[in-house]
Image (cartoon, rainbow, N blue to C red):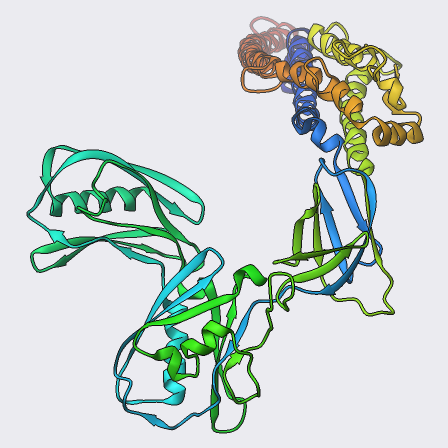
Length: 586
């Protein structure tokens, strides 16, 4: 006993006690905590994999039959023509020869000496520009200090900076309007309805302020202003982007009729939305102005006229030339650069043959010749260039790869559960006895191997019918790749139904997976439970360790008391032993 009551002996006894208590009381808690941590980690990983499966299932069910029936258009010579297709395009082969590309109408001015002073053009000059259904009214301010070149540049700059602007009639600001109604501001095809109600009466100044405020708060691309001119006011609308047209229609009520504000505009653009302009030097010391229509083709040919002043006439574009579309006879004279004898005989339209039939188009992008197909004409063909073939066919590979991605994401989940649901040499599987994991795995398996209900008899209703089988250990297997390709090519709508119908595979899988994912899903609840258990175990381990440590210290104190008592006994024993050997009185 004396050996145990040494300091090292006491330390050994206390350590032995602590170790025994830890093994008996803490180790089971740590093992349980570790099990919860492993489960939490496994379900977190599974949640990520289920998220990927949910995404691909959602993609498949949302694309419906459109993607399964999507088409590709291949060109035998994409240098001359390429094509894109929608799912509505019919399979077929089309022969195309391109003889003319669409161009923007081009108008050039007289060649004029750049530095010649001009002293008789002071004032505001306005001209009207039309291209197709669009128009612009452009104004240019001139003084008596310009030259030929600066006048050309000012005309060009005026076109560039011009915006679609429409102003109402001027009315007395103190006049009263009574009534209610609505109108539409159409900005490049986007219509915004504005309602007003002044049934109790309001002066025109307040009415226009209110209308301007309503427009500005509703349409970011339009600026509405109240213009004050002495005692009169008017409403001014300006499109911020010159390329966008402005229309004002859909009127109800009488605020904007001819007896009131009288505001009307239909598809007005800024000048730059009609034509691009440029001033250049064809030769040293000379200048020339050119206009090129923004939109290509005969229907968008340029039609222009001076409406006040003579800016166009000054550069050689007089009414006779513009009306008769006079061609420029030489490099130095004004005129049009492309001939247009008629809507079919012109140099502006794209011209091509489709399966031997002559076709014209305003644009080099043609979506009306073949249903569901957009042709992109790129270059004209010479006599020695081979006719291009456009081959429209089903886009099998894109859908096939998406289905294969679905099987991969399926297997990522299925095999992860499967591998942890069986016991092996390493011990009991992590998901053994886990009802949630078992339920998910069995649900996935049933969806994969079961017949899809609601499919017409004789149609594709099993994955096996498209070459995809189910393996108990590995999940879905593309066992017949050629069969998958064949079924997608020949029966795309049937394959789509099998995946995307109400009881379709992708639809069912998305629904099944959704029960487990999300903030209120099965996994979130499991992780919350595991998190609480882990925290409980950690707190229990901490409190138990504290209890063991306290008990160990009590035990240490008891041993130390015994150690002191033993030391006293030994000292007394030695004293009495010495006294006895010398005799009681020496």
